[in-house]
Length: 356
Image 1 (cartoon, rainbow, N blue to C red):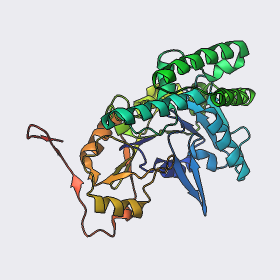
Image 2: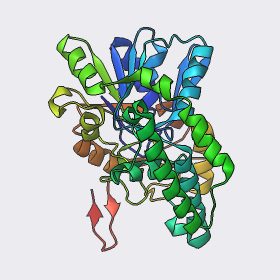
Image 3: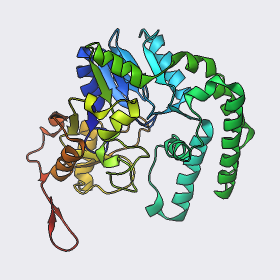
């Protein structure tokens, strides 16, 4: 499996693209359309938000596990865009029947919450992508979410969606926002993809276990990075799912002993998007220079990434938390024009000691 060891954007997509050549199945186990994996095939650039990078390798089966929150319209758009660019898609993508759906009101809630935080105090603003990931996982944890399997029963589906939409209306009103008729129409357009999603529904855990039992190779692909993990990251400036290696088994539906290798990915320097700590942050001039050299702008939002020196403290922590068996380093070439580079090997704590 491949896991990010910083704040995301480490180049996991490129590493997965290389490893996928020898895999039979590539499976994504958490996150949603807030992730963006950039892969180059010849002169073509592909930015994948939900479908695993293995889709660009002919014949590979690609799965979205139960740990994923599926942005239905974005997924359909991405699927069709790949087909339109000549990628064979028939029979190659499967979505867990237990995966939760991210619906338009989740995006509305996410954006409204961020806007309210901005109006109140900047310290409260997480700096999310506004894609609805947090509200979708919140509804999942509250046992009120809508899953792919719910699409099979139209009556139950309508009941659950209507209840969720009503809760969203109340929350938006409390945030000083209202749901207009267009949002209701968006929900209806989303549900029009019901039959299409059902045709892709599968038991991802069963597929993976059967494949491994038959001697086939499976590559698990994570999104974001260790420092954005809900439990092990820089809370509260984290994502809404578990991004570390342990989440892979749960997010696909297999036992942890099935995973025999964990490859961590780091950049030769450090970046993050959004608010939160970045201990090795560059001074403004160096920040701008490295950002331009490395093309450090979010694949999902286009926002400029904050940049800093390589953080070995974080890398050691990520190695421990994930139980790494290997490490891949990306973007070393970005630093080759600098006369010297720095590496953080310890932190100075508020009490004067060092944290390693």
